[in-house]
Length: 262
Length: 361
Image (cartoon, rainbow over all chains, first blue to last red; front, side, top):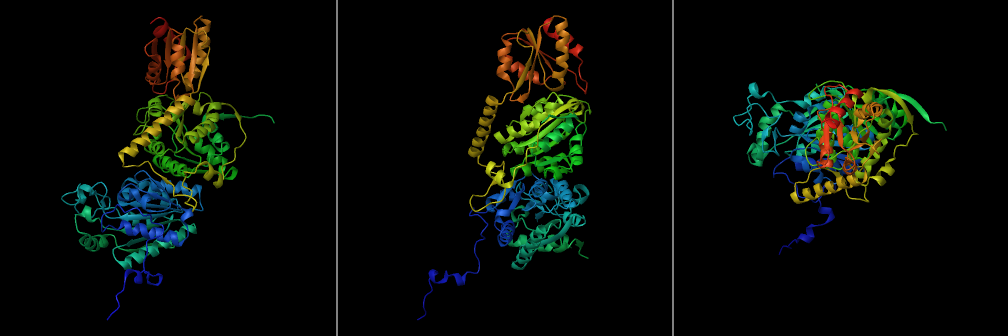
């Protein structure tokens, strides 16, 4: 007769393959099921934990879906006005150059209302890290057109699809800032598969390592989904992202060691 | 040791005062008539003198948000601008007030509305004292009427800002900013170390250490009951400021029959008008509010019982007069005289207005 394993038999140190990220708080995430924010939050906190930098890090939350990022990340954080996070980060880093300083921003925050702050912080070569989550839509306010909404893509303020003749083109701000001399490492990643999650974590780690070396601005874009804004199931949203977002926003490094990737 | 005296522009006095007050960071954007503040700072290399950071931002939006970022860290930070630039900063100022952060904003006022003119004006009184940005909040507002006060009020404003964890504003104008007068300089106050900041500002985002919970600076709270409590706390603070921090100056008010109420440049014009009035045998005094918020309501109210009328002299269409009228409660006549568009009234015009609008009116 086979022995029956109990829960207690399984919960042993040697069997642990995964545990809650130390620097994530116990607060239940406010994100929709299937959203990429939770994973991205976790990766940033894992990197800070690995760097043993909790006491040396100041994060800045944006306005958008991740407006409450400070409730989930167990570090000192500031809540910025919409789009202004890079301005806050600039001052913090200049006043406290020994701290890790990062902003966590969405596409409306970073690439529409905060374009000026983003471009100029990058162009000044501020030694900060920007984590940019791009899901092509304003999620929190209910699915309006974003600066990154794809041509033809539907949103509540372009219900018949984005007509570029009338509404303009989506802004590839990551390619734009990669061309500025103040940026040192610019990459675009995703978190929809375990392999991509690992790559994104590596990229975030690299961005923070380079920040410590005062190399200039480091920038990690995470192309993500918005299943509620896109009005799809989480699985379909991820597939739609692969089929539609990735061709327009191709994954991979854009600038490495201060040089554009050919 | 002999006092250190220097002939300076008002704007330069602000800059030198900032360095000597132990300011940690200045973030600004050029605009006439206050560009000398950042020019002076850049030329002085305060990073070598005290380690102070000076940065030219890409806009007033960025400068005030840099101030926000620095203030969140418990740093002594400031910006300066002039009217159109201060309008752009209102978003950030509201966030600073909402998050209860100390900082200094200097407004060297020019005429408006819109791009207006680069000449001096006092037409931003409402914006400075009634809120300016969105939400129920107040700025501690100081109105210098000399270059010496431009210098002195930097330290005063920083002290008040930290005492009450609230943004403070120096409401100056293009004349005070541009004119040169001698200034008595004070000794350098050292900038605070990180350890001193952590002790003085335990709320600041200085990095979460194991001995405390994480510090979060935000003006957001989606729970109405908590948001109301926060607002009530702010109102309680403004009440305390009103009770404790009123500043004003009176000149020849003891046996006066009439009073000029004026601040800043207008108060300087009134000083000359007092002399002219004396020659004519008119008994008039000058009441000069130094804090515009808190406004010296009780002092004006008390004075109103002893005089026949008040003339509010402002380089605007009449803004402070509303606060004077509220203080006087209709007991005596209160009129306004002023110039707009960047024109400074002459002492003769001021006296004439008193004779026509108050004495003869």
